[in-house]
Image (cartoon, rainbow, N blue to C red; front, side, top):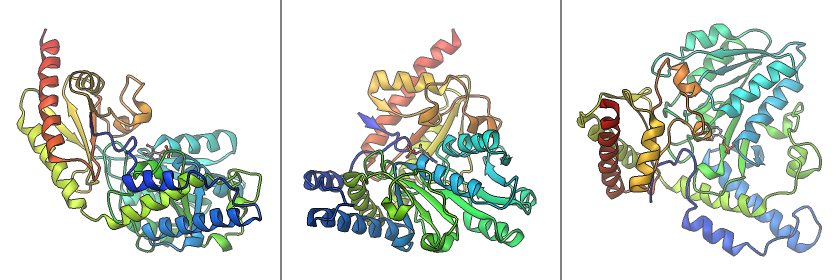
Amino acid sequence: MIYLDNNATTCLSEGVKKCIRDNLDLYANPSSIYKESKEAAEKILSARKSVAKLINAPYEDILFTGCATESNNTVFCTCCNSTKFSQPHIIVSAVEHSAILETAKYYEKYHNIQLTILPVDSFGRIDENKLVSAIQDNTVLVSIMLVNNEIGNIYPIKDYVKAVKKKNPYTLFHTDATQAIGKMLVDISALGVDFLTLSGHKFHAPKGVGALYVKNLKEFKDFVPFMKGGHQENSHRAGTENILSILAMGVAAEETKAFCSYDLIAQLRDEIESKICAFKAIPVRIIGDTEHRSCNTSCVLYQGISGIDICNMINSIADVCISSGSACNSVELKPSHVMNALNIDGIPIRISLSRYTTKDEINKFCNALFMTINKLKQGVNK
Ligand code: PLP
């Protein structure tokens, strides 16, 4: 198999597998009072420190969750329920993951939230002036992703935070950094955000574990837990801790922090794109803001050929795993909401690399892709 769908999910690293194996017998509930529980609690603390270090945040500000979707829901739950405004206002971008967009629409429909969805241009870029003009006195939250999962655009969050806070210092800023971790340096103090979401399975930890950074969590008096119940996570997130996955995410965080060769991943991505552009069988274009893009993502649109057909055929003839749009949309036979937002009428393919992707895999992938395109082209020309 040639796996180039790392924005959908990633493999477990060897270090992560070892951590899981080594801790299989650590089943004591960290909330109990015996020494085995204390060991579990101490290990969770150590994982919290590793995740915090990865994004240069105080460890007290890291909350473990079940996934990025839960982290995002937690932000909305807090901001929509702890406000003095009878109708709070929230701003999101049109290219957010459905974990943000659908949550925002839910609060609009059922909780009387005023929602602004910021448009993007044909490169997926957001106009900062439009963002600033959308801010109102009752704007409680702006949520804009750091890296887009389909086109790989990196958004200038640091600039947005400054501009937003200048217009309304009470507006909180959240960034969904799920696709940024492991693909670029992420530094909380440089970004200046109030909340940041991350997900273990996007950086070689298991599925079913995520984290949320909350600025000054201890002093955040109005925090409203999304998961209500017990007193885990200092009463910020109820539910017995997923110890194995939390420890595994701690190891993945340490490994990701130690990796800094993002330019090597970008070189492989650029190599794929130059080969794709040189292969002139069918008009093709690279989608997104190629000047400000994640090192690992390439979104490619072939004129007249659906990305779904390419994904299916390349998988059956060469065991290559790529995606058309986001993984969550792969069952739908229409352009994703991101393509609609960019005004692109077509379904592209998404190739997403990881730090484990090799040059040999890239070469094999390109050969398989061109064979696939030639076969599908014959169908188009019939
Ligand atoms: N946010 C972004 C930007 C994503 O790409 C994804 C998954 O693809 C999610 C959120 C949801 O992540 P999770 O599966 O951890 O809930």
